[in-house]
Image 1 (cartoon, rainbow, N blue to C red):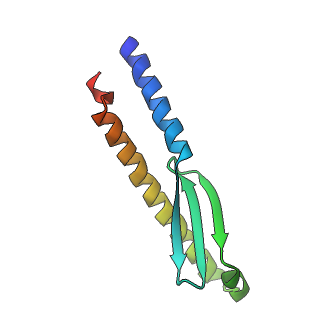
Image 2: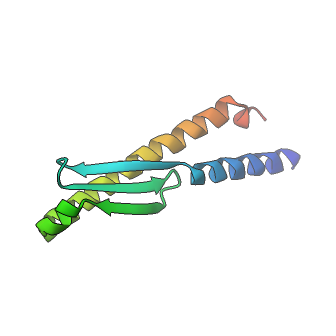
Length: 96
């Protein structure tokens, strides 16, 4: 039972750490850009559209860039979470 509590505490600590890590995903061609920022727990923190993109006004293009930027950010978040999990495993999480 004590090991279960230790495991839960460790998992809670990992989750708390992941919530403090932010990653960005970007889409666009440099002039027309979207940047999406998410936490490593995959919570969206921010979406930034370049002023030029907004002025350009192509709704479908903007939507495509937002989706692409979010998917890229989510992929990075997944990679960070997996790396943190591997680090915890190497640090003794599964050696209890």
